[in-house]
Length: 185
Image (cartoon, rainbow, N blue to C red; front, side):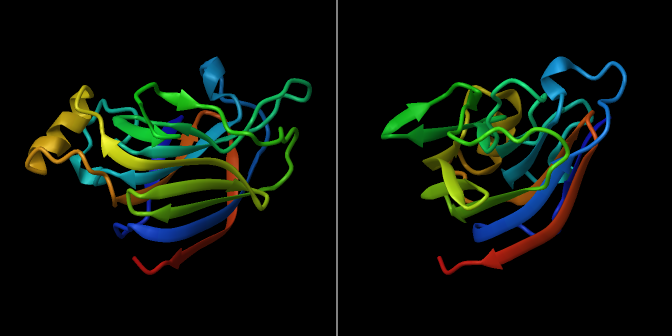
């Protein structure tokens, strides 16, 4: 019903591109917020450091959403499990932020891309359009899972690298054309 599949290496400067689409029906008893909901998790903690009951890795999520056929619902949003970011010069500590994308209803393929430059700047790109941008990515000192990572990093909050994972949240999602391009630092 829920899970993550991780890429084998840690990365810090790269472009990650993928096509995704939601299909079929959400699993029975899946929560309403998980309807046509998936994500590309960036700068993830090592999966071996996750606790058994931990729902999401400490990471930055490029949230992938599908429409319900009638209402507006953006994709390429940002969610921040165990992390904080700076947006327009201000440290932001809330959990989710809305992108400026179109809504994609039905089972159509959507091209999602992230451009990651360590902890300096990250851009979410949907069908070729930048829909969200943030910088100064860091661990959240108030999050119980992030606290362990901060302690292991001698108190440094900087989050400039990590694993990539694709997320499953109780609604069938398909991925294709998965590509990674490493960038110069």
